[in-house]
Each structure stands twice: as structure tokens, then as C-alpha cells.
Length: 189
Image 1 (spheres, rainbow, N blue to C red):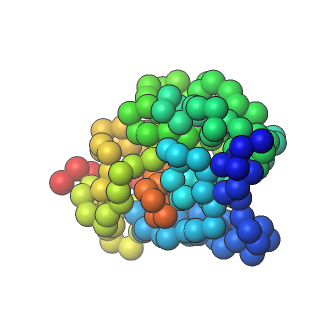
Image 2 (spheres, rainbow, N blue to C red; image 1 turned 90 degrees about the horizontal axis):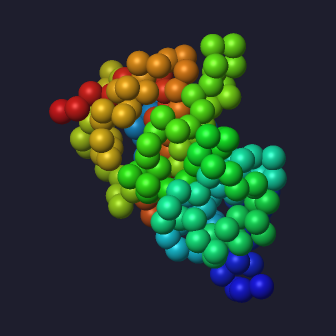
């Protein structure tokens, strides 16, 4: 097995996984707030932040979709060794990883059902950077308003219109994460 497949997991799994899980929960509970994570590194092009989210939120019972650009042999082998998540198409995925444009079309993913809105996908969108500027965010978990650099606003606005259905999204850039649950109201500025 290649070294890039064997390395990149948590060195102190219980401690690092607990920290990462807390950061992921905080990010989803406080949309638009940027958190720094560390402790994992999948092969390129997967960022540290996305690696940490995969190790923390996925397991062998979590169907994962790797979008073009992220669906390479090294990443597949890393996922198989460290997570064991079954790799599936976008329609069966509980989590999807890729660049924003590569994750499209967004209507290919599960958005839940009226009886089970939680049976939807969570996107992990890799971005070149994250900043507390750009689109205006309001809704649950946000005091007054937050601002976040998003790849676009239209898709998030359309997703919010589906509530209680829709997808949730983590944004990953380097060692930074932010999240936008489907409850977040997104306005372009």
C-alpha cells in the first residue's frame, strides 16, 4: 500500500475526533462562523478540513459520493483504508465531497421526504478560501446576521425554499470549515 493511503488519519483518534466533531457541530449550529480544524490529511486535492470532516462524520455505513476531481485512486484508497465508506453515485449518497462546480447538478442528491427530512445529503464543498464577507446569512443560530464568502447564493436560496427538505452543506478551505444548514436564509449583497 502507498504511504499516502496509510498516512493522513488522526494520530490520537479519540482526542482529535472529539475536537473535530465539536467543531463540525459548532459550525452547523452557528451558520457562517468559520472554525479551524487539524489532525488529518487525505491525498490531494482533499483539504485538511474536508479530511477531518470525512474521518469524523463518515464510517463504513455512510454512502459517500466523490465528485469528479476528487474521485481518484489515491482518494478512493484513503477512504477505503481510513473510513471504509461505500462509494456511491450522487443519488444514493449521505455525504458528497468535491469542488462546488463538480458537485453539480445539486438536484441529483437526496433531499429527504416529508416523513423523513433527515434522509438527505450533506455536501462537503471544497473552496479556494473562506472569509467572513460576502453573502448575508440570517436564521436559526445566527444573532442578527453573519457574512460568508459563498461560491454562489442562488443554490442556497433555492435550497432554503425546500425547507424542511433540502441538503445541508459544509464548506472546506485549507484548515477552515463553515456550514450552512438548510434553515439558513442567504441573501446576495
